[in-house]
Amino acid sequence: MYLTKEVKADIFKKHGGSESNTGSTEGQVALFTHRINHLTQHLKKNHKDYNTERSLVKLVGKRRSLLDYLKKKDVVKYRELIKELNIRK
Image 1: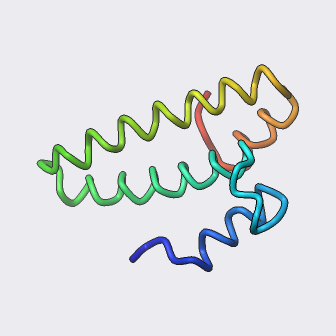
Image 2: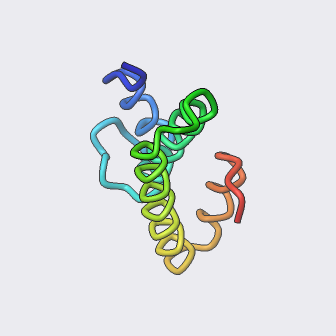
């Protein structure tokens, strides 16, 4: 599996503040970005996998909603996060 406990804990430790802070907006956006990158690589090899394509579109929408919330709440954190994760605006 591409997302082990250790990888997930590392993502939340780096972006969420601690491993147990899985509800933080920054941590969730980072986790979604990791999953989006994985699904994008999968779709490059399997371009007819429409279920994965649909899941990717839904995941991008969820990430966009969280980013909009973060932008409203704290613009500085929003700018740092998109710069760090290389997300297009």
